[in-house]
Image 1 (cartoon, rainbow over the protein chains, first blue to last red):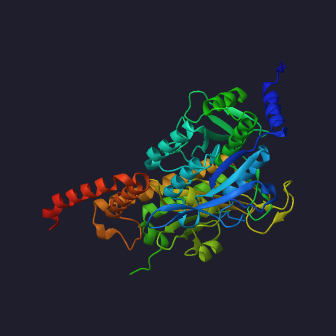
Image 2 (cartoon, chains in turn yellow, purple):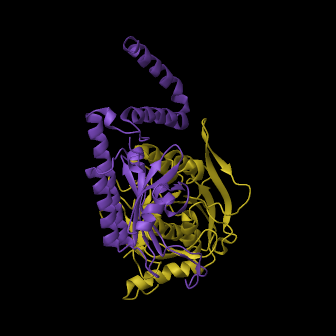
Length: 255
Length: 220
């Protein structure tokens, strides 16, 4: 039996790091964001496919990108993804661009992208963005479907929680994430009794920049991929884990 | 007749009005509290999908050259804040992960917070620092988000007052009217049903026909 030392936080961080060092099953993580610069060294070979949402007058549709290049219009998706690839070496990324171009911040694009990630059974879905409250019913249905299909949606709390904390982050079928400053990334805090259940490292996070190089980012968007990475590690080690079991393990790993 | 300013044209806020002064004050306060060198307010020109500089504070030179300038909605930190509806913090890009040698020029730090009215984007307020190694943090982001929220509320209140009073008070504005907002909301609902529940469309069509017939006498 593993002996639990007195400094529990360090012990937990070390267990997660050990998991990251092990040869785990690959886990598909769908990143719904502004696209990814697949040419960045941090993404090397890790982005397996790229899609974007096209909003025509008839119906929004998912289109596969011809080749894996720099598809990131804002640098947001690349930054988010670099956190996942760094913390979870077993993650295989599917880039689903729902921000930018004609899909500019549209909830329809987000819904279409999420529906596609659910259809392709991506095991972990990272949503470092939120939709308006009026789309909550649609997002709720999709989140429930994902939960029943054993998929884990990790969703960011709104940075500006004026009317709500953000959708789908408010749903219990998702794992919701706020930001906090931790000295190391392999840390997590459980927030008992709160709508947003966890907080992860999301301040001054060093991330990959689209087009090359590195920058720092702050916000719930950059705390969320830390939790997605933990989920990818846990699913990689124990592929049969159900979402509620993942939540329980994350809680056990939390401060 | 005076030339319309970006604020009057896109947000129906006339020069020298209390609302214009409050918006200026909010940007100034935001700048002071976050120790920024410059602060700007950009308004959304929906048809061209561009953000237009409406005011810049902190540098007379920038105010003169930037006001009226346009930036595409889909680019940079300002565009990202607009697209996500979330406050965004920008820092320089470094060549390597140890962050020593920077790539490219530009400010040391940028903060952009979206101005929203009923969750609809109307503009963005920004703060910029040129001091080496300066960074905006989570606290500054939260504060600026708050100022942007108040700025959105100021604009919303002005619109409500305009609607209650003489509608001709509203200058040449691209901001949506209540009628336009309602129309868009109905169209969006139908679009959502089309996408999420296409099998219910015939039912919706029948319902709309009935409504149209009922309204027929008053529609003439």
